Structure formats: structure tokens, C-alpha cells
Length: 449
Ligand code: PLP
Image 1 (tube, rainbow, N blue to C red):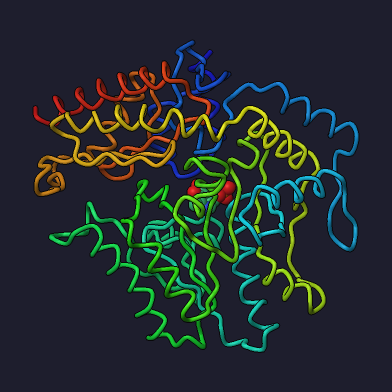
Image 2 (tube, protein in one colour; image 1 turned 180 degrees about the vertical axis):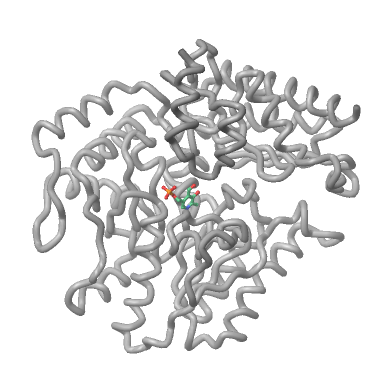
């Protein structure tokens, strides 16, 4: 029974990113099974998953082919490592497959168990790269406020979330510039001018720190956990110009934007970014197995391979079962044309409906790229005002209404987010939008009262 499970959960299970004592009072909503875009909880409610779990179940729930790939691999070779000059077939096949779908010149994969671990790899890799090139003082990595790169010490330090830094501190040699969040921070500037201004903070930071000390810049093509902040069109071209001018490495964290989310294999393609390293996880296996990695360009891989061991790796780097599942996931994406499907349902179908939410008095901007979107809740659209502090987090209240209406949407402050499985159909989009509107409207009535 649900109540018994909730009591056991509260007694023994420490949840990530959760106020565990508040959860203990309320009781967790416990998911039991899922198919396609639909979750079923222990009470039998059918919930539409507007977040694909944590932005990861790209091909949808319940695909038997992935379960079969896992079970046959477990029986064939359940585990072996890729350290000390050994390898195995799933890791080899997956690395070659990722190189096939990755942008040109990005042909090398270093596997990890998650996005956080992959970003830890990146910190060590870019510093090692400059050591080998004879510039060991190049140590600093520039990242962005409100960016998210995971919650290991390395990933959490790259991320620009003060709440994470507050719990355990952050490692040295990482600095943060402003984020391209025009809606909240752009004031009277046009989005284009604001995008340029934010990108130029990178140049200022490089000059202040000294280019001889800067190893790399890292950013998500679209900030995901920061609120699905779609940057103004001027932002990435200017970042690229600066990175090229000063010859620092560019890391695109594609943990969310990779594997079809934005309507291309990678968000870097969508935004015309030319990274040296891309972080991947989540959609790589559609979340069916924990696996991540760094896709590395030819030049960086060549330097890394030119000077003995790279003293870094994880027991589960390229885990055979996870690799076999990821390979099957990519096969399904290719054979079923899932990226074409994203383009077909996102524009104009979902886009029109998503934009339609701005007809609600409490919804300001609505942004969408592929199947990744956000809306800004506001008491006054014209001035892009924030809610008064005493109103509490309206986004949180709205998310609670969604939950009650059997829709999973996430909130970041007063932004509401979607990132549904990429296989969502137009009929399911209709249900998602209908439930979103109803939830926003219920929240609006409560806030007005
Ligand atoms: N990078 C980005 C952009 C992410 O969104 C996330 C997770 O949400 C991570 C890294 C961390 O990935 P993981 O949770 O697999 O460690």
C-alpha cells in the first residue's frame, strides 16, 4: 500500500535535491510503471510526463528492445573494464556510433557513468591538455552563473548555482560570468544587445584573469536546470568569436541538449557552436542505464594521446551493459527517425500551442527549441515584473497544481519547464497543453485570492 511505502521511504531513503523532512510529512508520490510518455503511480493515476524523467527518457518508457539489449549483454559479458589496455565490444561499438552522429571532427569518446562524472573528466582533461602543451599555468575554467553541470564537487563547482556551492563549497580555479537570461535581467536592452553584452563578459573575464591562465569556457547551449534559458541569437556567435580569438577550449555541455532534444543530434549544431569537447549523458541511453561521457575533438584527443597515461577513469567507464543499451537506443533513434519526429511535432504544432499559453494573463514569454521549452510567469507582462516576495514561489505553486492534475512539469523560480519524451504525439501534446493551462489558471486564481 502507498502509505506503507511512503513510511519506509521517509524512514530510510534520503532523496537528492529534496527537503527530506518536508517530504516525510507529505509522503512521496511513488511511481510504479510507465509506457511511452505515461507514468502510473501506486494509486493508479496516469500521469503525463512533461519532463521525460529528468530530461532523459527520450525514446519513451517501456521499450522492450532496450531491456533485451541489457539482458543479453549481462549474460554475454556483464562487466569488464576499459583500463590498462583492455576493451570490449559494446564500448567499441558505442564509441564508433557516437562518433558517427557527432559533429565533424569529434571522433573520440571518454566514457563516464553520468553527466557530473563526465564534467569532472573535462576539468581534468582540459588542464592536462594545457600541461602537455607546455602551458601548465592555464588552469582557470570560465563558466556561467545559474549554469548546471552536475553535483559532484567538480560538476557542482562548474555550475553557477549558489545553493549548490553553499553545500560543501567549490573547487579552486573556476569563475562565473553572467547568464544570457534576457527576460529577467535584460532591462531596457533589446535581446540582441543583451546577448552580446553577456557574451562579452567572457572577453572581459579572459583579459582580467590573463589569457595565459585560462584553460576553457563551458556552457550549456540552452541552460536547462537554470530555467530553459534560450540565449538571444547574438550570444553564441559572439562566444565563439571570443573563444577562437583567445584560443581557449570550448566545452558544450550537451547533457540535456544532446541526442535530439533540440531537433538535431546536438544543440551545438542547432546554435552553430564548434566545441572542442561535448559532455553527454541522459539521452545517450534514454535514461535506461546510467552512462555519460565526453566527446572529444581530434586535436584535443591527439594531444591527450601524445604523452603517456591520462590518470583518470571510472570503474564503470564504458560499462558493457550501459553501452549495449545506449547503442540500441541510438539504433532506435535512427531507425525510427526520432529526430525528424521532433522537428515535425515541435514546429509548428507544439510551438503554436506553447505560444498560445501566453494568452493567459499570468504567462509572459513562452520559449521553445525542439522539445525543450519554458514559460515565464509574471504579474505584469509589459514590465516583465517578478511576483512580490510575499506571494511565495508562484512557479512552485503552479508545479503543485500540475502534479495534482496528473502532469509533470518542473519549475525554476517562476519559470515552468517542459522537456517531454521525444516520441510525444500531437494528441499527447494537446493533453499536456490542456493540463498546463488548467494548472496555471488554478494557480492564478489562488495567487489572486
Ligand atoms: N550537465 C547538465 C547540463 C545537466 O543538465 C546535468 C543534469 O541535469 C548534468 C550535467 C549532470 O548529469 P548527471 O545528473 O547525470 O550527473
